[in-house]
Image 1 (tube, chains in turn orange, blue):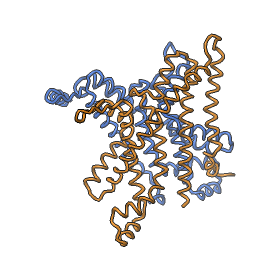
Image 2: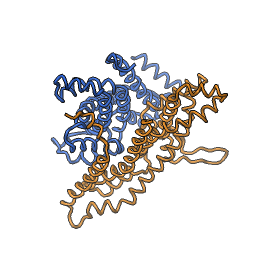
Image 3: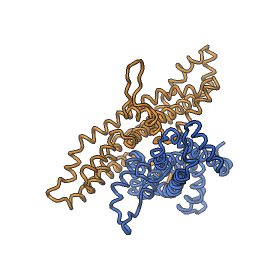
Image 4: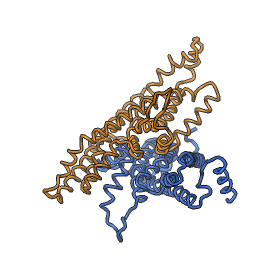
Amino acid sequence: MTLWHDRAQSMGTSLTSASTGLALAGLLVASIVAAQIPAAAAKPSVIELLWKWTPLLAQGFLFNLLISFCAMALGTAAGVLMGFARISLHAPVRGTSWIVVQFFRNAPWLVLLFFVMFLMPFEVRVRGITIPFPDWIKATLGLALPIMANIAEIVRGAVQSIPTAQWEAARSLAFSRRQTMWKIILPQCIKRMLPPWMNWYAILTMATTLASIVGVSEVMTITNRITNAEGRTDLLIPIYTYVLLAFFVYCYPISRWTRRLEARYAER
Amino acid sequence: MDDVAAWFLWLYKATGIKLTIFYDPYDRTRFIQGFFTTLKLSAYCLVLSVVLGAVAAWLAGSRVAAVRGAVAAFVQLFRNTPPLVQLYFFYFAVGPLLPKVDGVPLLGSFGWAVVSLTLLETAFAAEIFRAGIEAVPKATVEAAQALGYSRAQIYRKVVLPLAVRVTMPAMTNNLVNLVKTTTLAYAIAAPELVYMSAQVWSEQVNVPEMMIVLLVCYVTIVGVINQIMQWLEERLRVPGFGQ
């Protein structure tokens, strides 16, 4: 009798990626085929409709990716600083950063997004120069906040995972705290931080669809507009599956790659 | 209660801080309803996803390759697509296909939120349980086999009790994520906390106050969950595991 240990481990093999992608694509095809049957000759087929709207949907999806890049860059920069604050030798800095991190990690993304959307001005005047904040910039900031808090925890965790002996060894070699951090500790941390960082990027990319709730014209908003404009009930399942497929094709390789890196680093 | 209401009314008149949910009966009722809807939504999804997740983790060790593949595909599908799109997919695309009973859809926005979030959480729970199952020492399973336990018995009586304990921290995390994800139900107008608060703030024009109330509510719920789970973890601890 084979133990289901061994079997369970085989879950998530390359067969999976193919089968999941196929499952989604299959659903897309099946829904299109099902939609074909009642479609009269006068009305365009679902495939034609999907094809017609693909450029607009792709544009929306690229906008999601743009938001994800910006939010990730911002969140990572702020998160690294916040992570350093979490391990500061200065107790008040440590305490304050702990509160900030806990708050932004535990608040729902949507509520944070609302928070930034409603409470941030749409433009700021600095010495006569008007800096506008369009909706998508505000959404990016709102999404960067939880990323910041989570990256801070990753940084703290990675730094604390380095054996204390290394700090002591560095000190005995007359390295300052800053030098130890930059030259000895952090280079080793990068490797440990990369997989969770990539994981958060995938989560963020999927969360960019939340921007549709606050009125940013990303892929979800566009999809809803298309379904409203076409008013075709047989288009609904194909078009939502299409969007799901787009995200899956983008996010699944990232999650596979993350797993591979994790496994590789765990071996050493 | 009257004192509290009076104080918040005084606060509004003195400072302009408008927390109608404390003194306006209509707003208060709405808000409390929203709060309990969020708790109810979370509880339904939690129970269903833990049960389905355990089943999925068990099926992931099936002898039939097709079953293993199907479970893996399900897990990867729900983990790698946006939860909001899943919700829209179920509510807007699958929803209209369901038959209507007396002109009322079989599942409303709350029902679809339960279905969609449960499936999402099942995918996460399945992965967590799988990791927990893998953490159970092989020798323990072999010992159970030697004692004549069947596969199902081993799973139910030996592996699962141990795996549940190993997975507690990850489950806590998952539960916190679940509560946070219930806010998405706002998008399909399920009457949960964010939706009800949005109704209050659009009528009373007290966005900043309601925002802070919302954040405090969620951070409190999450804090309580963390405390309960920590307590549970200590209660369920088996000697000889962990430190």
